[in-house]
Amino acid sequence: MKRRSSCFPFFLLFFFAIGLLAAILFTPVLAAQSYGPPSPYLSPWQRFSYSASLLWNAGNLTVPRDPNGAQQIFVIETGESVFTISTHLQSAGLIRDASTFRIYLVWTGLDTSVQAGNYTFSPAMTAIQIAHALQDATPSEVAFGVLPGWRMEEIAAALPTSGLVITPEAFLSAARSPSAPLDFWPADVSAEGFLFPDTYTLPRSSTADQLVSVLLQGFASHLTPEISDGIARQGLSLYQGVILASIVQREAIRADEQPVIASVFLNRIAIGMKLDSDPTVQYALGYDAAQGTWWTNPLSLEDLQVQSPYNTYLDAGFPPTPISNPSLGALLAVANPAQTAYYYFRARCDGSGYHAFAETLEQQMQNACP
Image 1 (tube, rainbow, N blue to C red):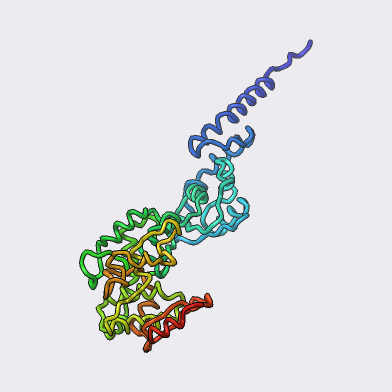
Image 2 (image 1 turned 135 degrees about the horizontal axis):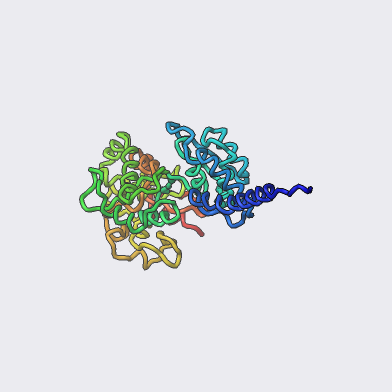
């Protein structure tokens, strides 16, 4: 009598296959609900195996390594692999498991867009938060530089590429009517002259008013008794001293000439002579579209006749406000000028940026270039 063959192994294999197929189909769906859709470049088997790993090791992604951990700088060099980056993150105590972190990056496709740069991370962040932060190396703070001799429009022009969210228009509005002006300048004047040249580290989210305030604080912090007392010894108010420093800043190509140039203007002031300064005319003319600059050079005879209170060839005394934002060196030059008998100066003919100085108009004419 023949024994009947059993169908049990067949059904067992059938149900196993059905279960495996269901797992392959639905495990990625469950993972996608928690971690987002998989990268389109993954094969079906990769989608299944990666999703299973993500679901099994969920805590490695969603639970911070140390909720009380301190922030630290994490550097990614250009060309570093995701394997190396994830390993370093685990070694630094920032993530729980490098392997799960790598799988998450590959699952989401974020592995292809990790940026080199300096990051500030904390073990209190989840691995998922760190993974997404790796897509943007833009720092939360920005280094913003103001160059000596810039007028406030030039500061404004530097903002669009600075990383700050401040528009040029918002900055100029804030600078023209500062919310917290320093206490020694006249009412209803702009912050021109007091936006201290330096490099400042600022939050990217800084407002225009905050930027102006920081620049004014930069000036106030550099206003030492040596400067204020020195300006007073020249018979000038502090505001007049800043005006003169702004002129000296624009006249002096070479910083070591600033005290001598300051002495020329102070000598002119002492005898009631007009300042006769080209930069004040340039300031009056404003932006030169043909030259692409706020400082027209050279000036024509017609330019020197421009009707403006800033034209010191026509009007005696100081212009109404500073014409640029002077450096510490220019302020010190006005406070402690060289002791000279010079009343004139003009650019040397050798292209060095230095000037030839003269005591008389006749000597000034002799210093003209051939």
